[in-house]
Image 1 (cartoon, one colour):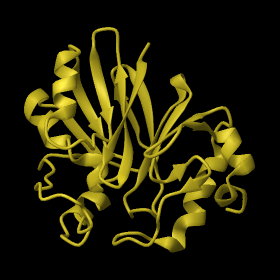
Image 2: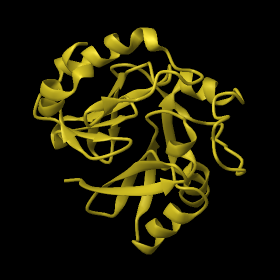
Image 3: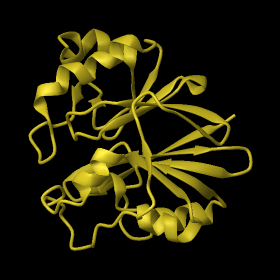
Image 4: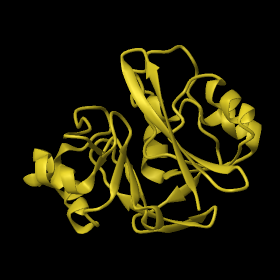
Amino acid sequence: MLKLKTFTYPVQAFSANTYLLIDELNNCIVIDPGQKGHELRDHLLASGLNVKAILLTHTHFDHMRGVMSLVEQFDCDVYAHHIDVLLFQNPEFNRYCPTDEPLVLPDNIKFVEDNENLKLLDAEIKVLHTPFHTKGSVIYLIPALNIVFTGDTLFKGSIGRSDLFGSDPFVIADSLRIFKSLPKSLIVLPGHGEMTTLEEELAENLYLVYA
């Protein structure tokens, strides 16, 4: 059975969550490694963990700055939606990034698609495309663990911005309605802020209530 660990880190005015799924052999999946430099890599090495895959909910800097450090160390696969990889190549996409560090993604990213089922570390991971924060935003659902990684699509009591380059405010409602078809018992693990439950968000998050 996979174990879940959460890391929250400051990025100047931002604060974002990185998640680790770890199996009994200390292999792990990293979701949204946004730490700059080698901070996360050094932590994983010190903990004896071996990264097998990186899942990106989207390619904003605060969710992917640690990708290349992990790829260089662990030679792991990186998964993201192809639309966000294309957006990332446009310099306007991350122009608000508060850093002089070069933002790089590997050339051999594995593209994920809506309703695709990934099998990683013996876990079935369902990909659902939820464009609006970025056109390639996705969420990752793991039914066996009753969790969903929502990136910047859904937060506790709120949702991600839709006024950035590469956003699409006209599909917010369509993306949010996806959550109404998912099990209410799901634990929601967002890209920013506290974890919550889908039941709580469906009842109290007005963006979902009126979607």
